[in-house]
Image 1 (cartoon, helix red, strand yellow):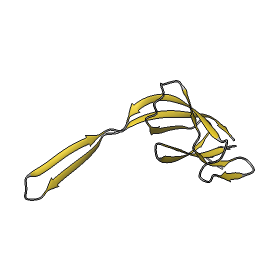
Image 2: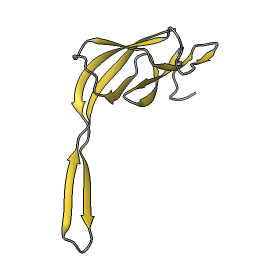
Image 3: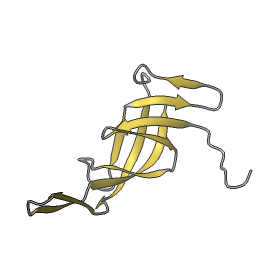
Image 4: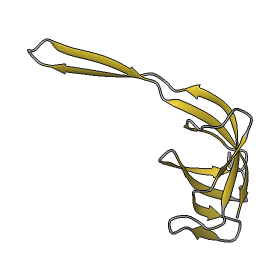
Length: 111
């Protein structure tokens, strides 16, 4: 198999109202966490857990499962522009938005 790596344990976690599929040493951008850079965070909303021999699906979460991650850095996302207008009325409005993000690295998955 080209480009695939063997993953012993995976999990589906929920943070910031979104779901992410993660494995150990993965880096991902999530909604801003109220944790300083370099500190660890315990993500206990584990919706699914996959080990080498079995898959556990939570109802809604898997009991006693936890994902330990480290906050690598905080950053801001790409700027999005919203433009509103009403035809024939001269009304135009342009607003922009940049989402606050945290980059986290998954350290371990505890079942």
